[in-house]
Length: 76
Image (cartoon, rainbow, N blue to C red; front, side):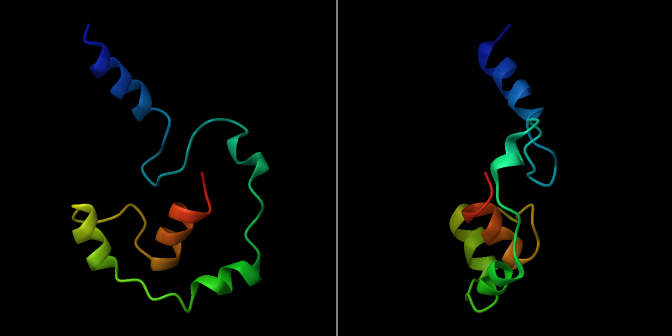
């Protein structure tokens, strides 16, 4: 067996297709999103197309600006 292939297969089981980590209790220590915090993301200027271009990808897992930023900054 090729170790890298096995590692990639293993890592693929740790996250679902929306980027949610599938390890039990991992999110237990993550504070719930408050309305106040959610409002902080709205005025942020963020160009999804430019982000994808700079990252070298065609699209992101999350489609909304707020969700992209939260998954980059807030969630594990």
